[in-house]
Amino acid sequence: MNQKLADAIQRDNAAEEAGMHADDRKTCWTHQTWAADCAESPLHTRPSIAHHPRPA
Ligand SMILES: [Zn+2]
Image 1 (cartoon, rainbow, N blue to C red):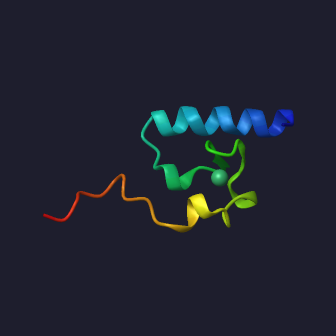
Image 2 (image 1 turned 120 degrees about the horizontal axis):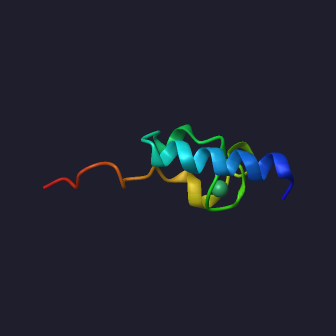
């Protein structure tokens, strides 16, 4: 991991903790890389339901 990426992850972590939506991250916490570099990962192809209420 290069320093620029490490800094960006730190920045995204701080921003997310301050209320930014996870979808607005430029980096991927799961893969510790740029979000654009792992957008095709199976982990990311299904939409996250974490922020939506379950249907009754
Ligand atoms: Zn990822």
